[in-house]
Image 1: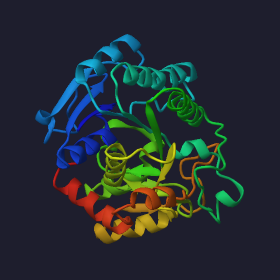
Image 2: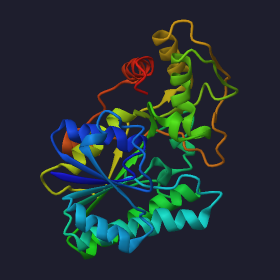
Image 3: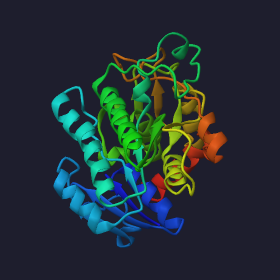
Image 4: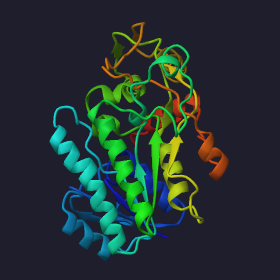
Length: 320
């Protein structure tokens, strides 16, 4: 199968490309710049087209040229609070452009990578200390611009699915961690990845607060596996959205214990309390993953100790 990935040279896209190629499928990428830093091992197996999802005509031309059967839409802007108008242009309009281009090229399915941000803020029974798992059909009411654009994009795709023959599905991920994020992102988005990668490379990691906070963590290889499973599903999917997560929270203290086990002598200091990323609308939550488990028999392959061990091994082998 031919699969096109928007934003496919980023962290999640790099591991998705590896997963798809390992399964024997053809991968093409539409990306704003040609930078194969994160896929040196498979760069010669990935067709890269430089383009922008905000350019509707250019994107449609690219999709017609690449002729994918499925599009995985990863491209997105994260810094939405500072640049709300640009966020709406890239995230929402860009998603509409992807769907329009898919229709013009007779693409069968669009898989959209959404986020747990559509459920934020997680308060009451969904927040600390109970962290009741959130199912796909409840608690949708984001107040942060990132979550708003993700939710809006899901609704845009739902409209296309309802009014055309295009199949659209959204995947809502827990907090993703894994190698490569330090190279491509900065700030709080990297808290969990930094907590592993820095000690593994012999550097200190200090967090002033948040050791008691829980969050639903999903390893980036499981992210790639879940996206590939949905993208390649032979039958039409029964639901418009699926949670991709462990189904329970892991505290930073517990993650720290796993790091210290994998990296003896790790220079790792964690302050106690909650909200390590100092979020005004808390994103810390557990997601109910039973829908995709029941329908596609998908579950994470990596628990926290296994993910940390794998991550540390990649750092030490200089793959990360």
